[in-house]
Image 1 (cartoon, rainbow, N blue to C red):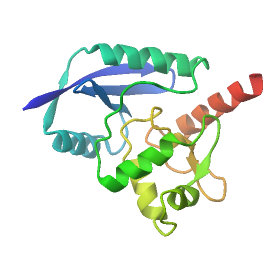
Image 2: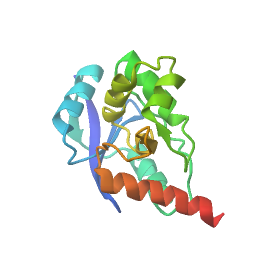
Image 3: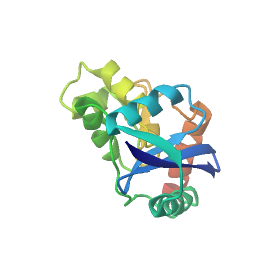
Length: 172
């Protein structure tokens, strides 16, 4: 059985678990999220691999890019990503990647963008299953009424990430 190299990274907003499989980042997720075991199980099952604490150069690159993002000097990432999910989840995550830095989008708009405006709940569920937080910016998705809704890192962190991105836009 293959292994997923993981390590923990203390970000300014909370502890993140990074994971690499076959030289691709497959995890950048909040260590203490509610669905931690379910997400880990899904990734291990999908990749037919176990998680092992280990170092990998790609994790170091991910940390550098995350720190640049937190310092407001990076708007986009160029780390190779491995999306470990169903075809539907992957379509939602690809749509999330297209949400511009500093912008927000509703679950309804996101479901319309993937071609199924009736799939709002399924889109929300796929959004919540995202294991590549920040790299796949699920924090940019809000309720249709403009309110912040669930986030694996917590609503406070979601609000802080959105504020971080809007601060950079107002400075430039």
